[in-house]
Image (tube, rainbow, N blue to C red; front, side):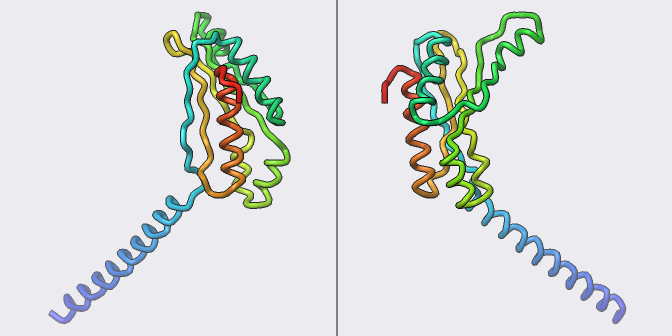
Length: 161
């Protein structure tokens, strides 16, 4: 009987250690999720302007706000070409401001993931949708970038900001 009690005590001790480790890991995961910079809010507007006009106005608004386009991905065209068929127009415009990028890096190297900013433009039924992600509201620079991105999207929509 003493041997079984000893074995039982070892299993209980191992169980307590495992449960403690799980509790520590769970606490870390909850802390990380609560404090991660990867919290995004979508910002979406619709317009009845045609796709090409929205793309033109988007590029213009980006330049007016002192950002530079780093790339434009014409996803819809690529799908249409690859499948040799018509496909909806879908593009993603990436843009950056090096002064803002520098400020992000100075605050935290992880913040560079916010640059370049992205705006998607796509057809949905009779509407053209302009959509982006806004940054978490961690500090003034994030709020400033969010305001700028909203202004760029709204200008592309036809609301001049």
